[in-house]
Length: 196
Image (cartoon, one colour):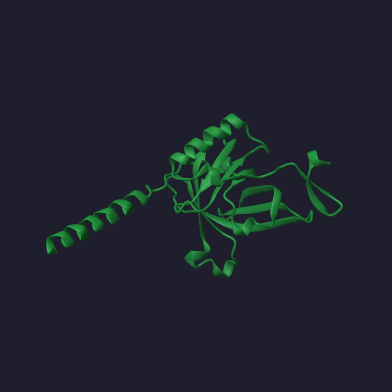
């Protein structure tokens, strides 16, 4: 009987180990190199994983990157809210991996808190067009994901190719929500232009 119990315990332990190994994701990889001056400028959000800090946004979401005189980055995120007003938030950015420039850190918290590591969020560039026409940004835990483009729309065939690549990196394409970029304000409310 003792032998059977030992075999059962070993079997349970091995099953638990196998499940843990299966659930363990491979480390997230970034693109090999990012030319920061080329990356600067305005990006349109094509799709994203829903998140709490963008829940007020209904469309026209953009991120504009610029470089300060001290070499640090600045990010201006803007979007249209349901009431037709624009929401804007500025963040400081810094390069976390100077070998590739593909791993950035972004902070929306006040400057006096910048010494605290947890106020800096990972912002990794995991897919990038060679002409810098689109980019995909994620982070190592795969909780956040954005697809960005220099134009308000992206070709559907290209979008599907991007989805295939991000899936191979451990992201779930079905979690993505497309961002309307054709919103306008009518009588104090945000509406899509084709609905006018």
